[in-house]
Image 1: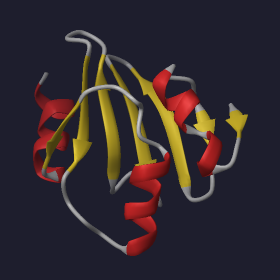
Image 2 (image 1 turned 135 degrees about the vertical axis):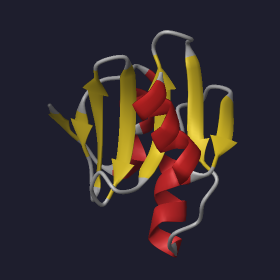
Image 3 (image 1 turned 135 degrees about the horizontal axis):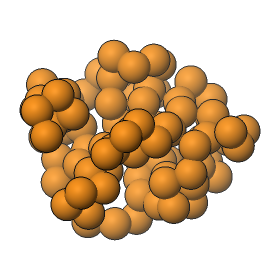
Image 4 (image 1 turned 90 degrees about the horizontal axis):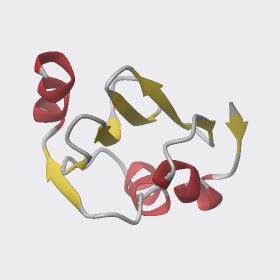
Length: 93
């Protein structure tokens, strides 16, 4: 797993590489690549490998999480959904 700053992590997110940032991490998990903030309870970004689609959280949590969302953006087209819907994608696809 690559260790990096959040400011440099977007390239790892875009390439779907496992990384550990500052209170963030990205992991390949089966059909998905998921970027988390402060643990697995808050998804920043989700990539569905079967449909080649990026999803992001439209939910706001804190100022630091909003900053992470900006820093870790995959630089691809992203569909923003509530956390509940992101978790449904993982559980039901």
